Image (tube, rainbow, N blue to C red; front, side, top):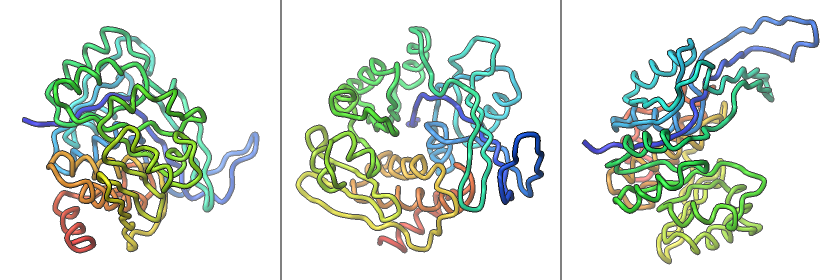
Length: 302
């Protein structure tokens, strides 16, 4: 059975809402709303794919603590099979307390951020991902695994995220290995050194025949061969919280790749899942079923 795979750290978000201000030193404030959710990154993309009916597998670090147990439960509830890369006794997840204010937010995070895999973890991830139709790439210690998967025919989709040192020189090995790269406007301009997203999109043709550059709330640039086009965002989706929008876009985009859709179709599907994600607070609160996604696709884009 075909599936989508990925490796990445698991994030758990504790979201505190309903404050008018931050507490001062020695003060205590009570919030009006609270939720406990999985956060963004590869886990969020795979969970959104699982909700769309696609089998997904993740290699991540999980312990025996309550947060790891919560994460395992959420993965399994959403059609994602977790494979554990961790054997220690600490809490291996990233745990974030997010204080949501009316016009801003602040974050406090425990964790190391990313996975630093040893040879055993790399082999575990490879054996899990072997045979996947699509694999999500992230910079880190799994490059050799991605290269093996590419040779075997897996479609590789790269998500670098932001880095002050984004450049062709630093990330060339990942760009050469990936089949698709989905940067936002800022990331695309940083990695190419160009001053507009349009110029950045054309500069990415150095590595990709099919280019994607997300232009924030406006929509997304696509270049398929020599065909340049722009896909507008879905206007009816109103932005409440942009957390997880990029991860959600990626899920719709990969949904299209999984079912062999055109680049334009993949971007349209990504715009819908990414747009829906911003309508609620949290990385995984705003989402669509497969039937809802296809209904939006037919109604908005035809």
